[in-house]
Length: 207
Image (cartoon, rainbow, N blue to C red; front, side, top):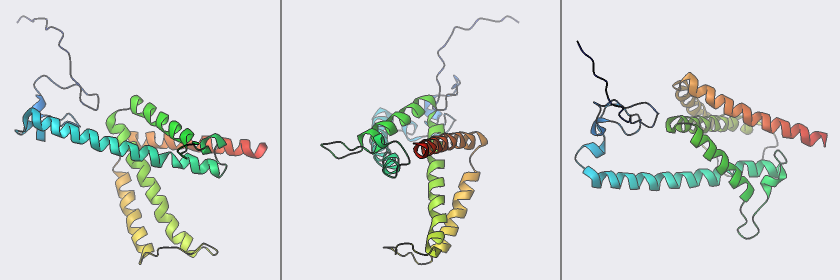
């Protein structure tokens, strides 16, 4: 039985970086996972449908990125105001009154993480970070209600502790569905942030 040398054919990759086999046509692949499965572009919408879906995705992603940059940059800005991070991050633009230093830092970190990781990995880290933030909020609700001297809440949620407990259980269940690699990546990012916070805190106390 004779063998023939096959020419080098460019190998396509999905968004996870996995090679797409030659017998897997684009019309049978999921656009996110790269696995076989029908998606809207391959169900009769053609090039026009693909263009519409792509335009909608770009608009949606652009809006979401703007929200993440504008809201995420307020965290280092607020920490700088509380002297938990360098005061440079608390500076405001003279004309627009926006925390430009915090916005630039947040955008730079997001860009690096986006270029250095896959789409799915970045999406997972973002989801885990949100869930941890929501969990901290759920835990804080009953604690602050019982703490003496806490300012009176402007909005009182009926059955707040019950809702917080149920939400916390749902968050734990969602976190348990993440893989060990995804969880480890999120932990590493959290540890890096904690080290930066503790280092500046020690520096501030010594100075």
